Length: 110
Length: 110
DNA sequence: TTGCATACATAGAGGAGCAATGCATTGTTG
DNA sequence: CAACAATGCATTGCTCCTCTATGTATGCAA
Image (cartoon, rainbow over all chains, first blue to last red; front, side):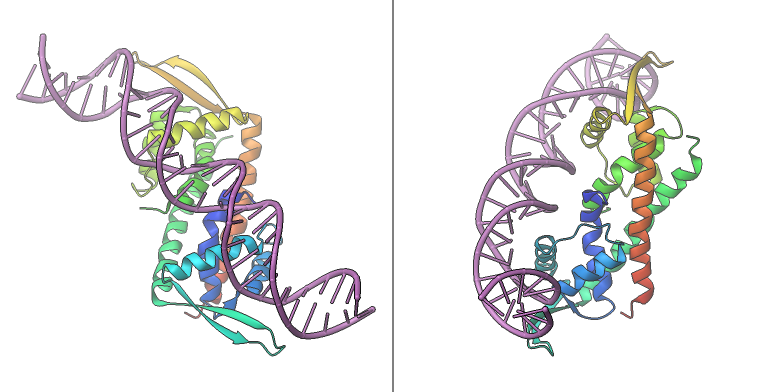
């Protein structure tokens, strides 16, 4: 299982990235992340919803209730302008850290 | 400045990567990270030493006191076998998360 | 009607980060 | 030679956050 600090650090970027493809809702997001990570990321609903609420509080995403075909109520989340901006920042930061790490990897002699 | 969750998540891999090039000591590590990140990673000594101690407690690195040319005492850290293993794991995890993120990036239409 | 998948939500214990602070030495500048 | 900057290691404790455990509710299939 992937280390929890890494899971924590990637949570917001992953969610924002997912929503950048179009709106989605909690349960579906969890499934998607599980699939994408080959079940290596131990996400539970108890971990996801607080993040969604936080992102909404920060104004990066917004939600609307909607009824699915099957009659269930779902809370759909979608990206706001600030969310797009935040996502770009995330991308930049990840690229930087990734560059630092892979730069070092090449220099290793162990 | 880079988000602190990301800084936290990258701390151990970065330190281990640095030490994989050869032994080093606290102060030098901080300088190196600052340089590598283009001063975007706000590391202080108060943040580094606990991580070093933790890594040592986990048996991934080891330390020895030594006198530098200038007469100062330095605590040099170097990688142990477990540290090398941990580093490989870190690499794998980062690759996975990075793949998930960049995979998503390509699918975005926002 | 039992059980499973779907679906959202929060309380609170536990843990981790890091700012602040402390100590000591060397080199440098005025 | 006094004062300051840079070097160098270390810990305390407040605060913030995570994530486990738990709760609620519905649709559907066996």
